[in-house]
Image (cartoon, rainbow, N blue to C red; front, side, top):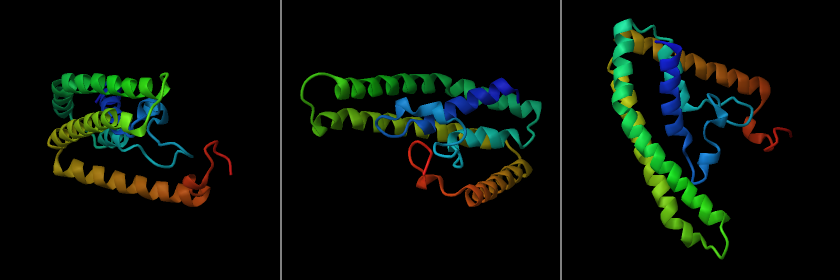
Length: 172
């Protein structure tokens, strides 16, 4: 699969996973493949396309995966547009003039959560369809790569310490 195709898949799946929390729009893709802190925790939405790259798909499989992405792109764009608008509504309320109560953010927060859920489900649907393109050997290889990455993360955590114990600035 071409680098551009993987970046598109990574971008879409990454956006799905990175839109967590009511104010996550400001956080989003800044963490890239690896999460915040010391960068030891993977972003699951970004790991899937990276692992997919490792299985050695044929040209025919790559074409099928691209077709799956093309078929889902309009729905992702629609949901992401709605989510951006919902995040903007929350931010406008938070930073706007006048009094504000937690109850004032309840409905907008629920809208953000519902859109996040829809995006997550769309991402799962895409991943499930893409998984259907892979052979049993490719799935076994993907599982092996995932397990090896987990072992590598554990070793990094052992060498560098627990990133959750770090202060927000990254220093003890």
